[in-house]
Image 1: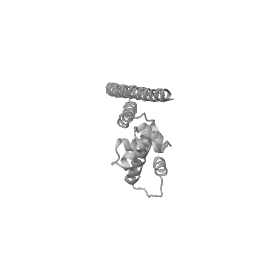
Image 2: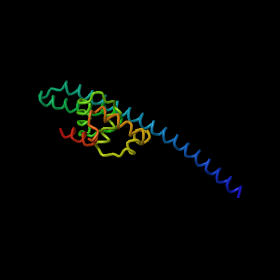
Image 3: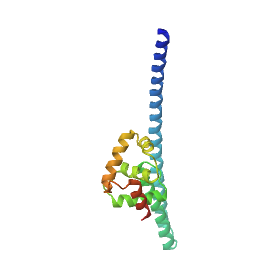
Image 4: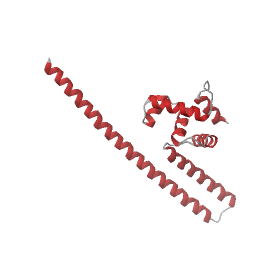
Length: 167
């Protein structure tokens, strides 16, 4: 009986050590992916700037030149905001985040990201996982954002953000 209990404890400690080891590997992989994404974003922005510079040197219709330049600038703006928030953004997401940032300039990049996740319908536990904080921590962050947005206690953040996106 004693030997079985000792074996069970050893197995438990061995599993905990292996879980910790795998978590370290996963964290290292996340960091490497993040670094690679940042390098890719910088390369994309540099390429877009070069394209914009080449467009300016072309001997084409000025309206076409302006349209092409504006398209490149929109893509660069999307990339810069995505890099700042550390997430991929669709064009609709970018428009929403820019509206939100304009209306509430005091929101941090993390606050903006959480507002976007909220508008998209993610649950608190999912957002906590994305932000690498606990569920209770995410509830505190959402409460603080609720106050920063200046909405009433009976109004939901999701309703407010959805209405803002439709403006």
